[in-house]
Image (cartoon, rainbow, N blue to C red; front, top):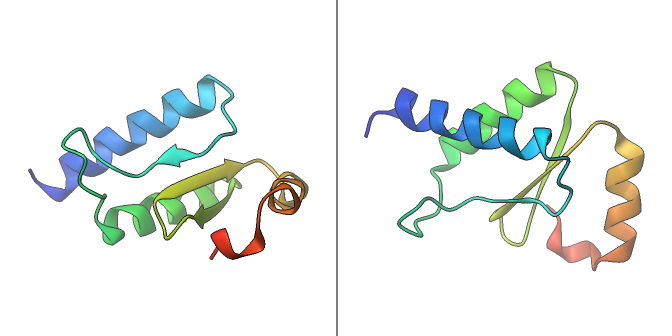
Length: 86
């Protein structure tokens, strides 16, 4: 599958994730249980940051957390072990 098609699919997943107001993190594996290419994740994070969303990766870069401000990330980090975040 081409990079742009995969990227577009992940944009849709993120859109749905944000619409649902989820805060548990987005699992960065595809439907075949293969971890998403780092280049895709980096591109998504740049786009989200440009839209003023704050992102962080956790659990060895397999979960993407998306928040609308830094305080939410800090609050969540304190409820988990610090070493799970990059």
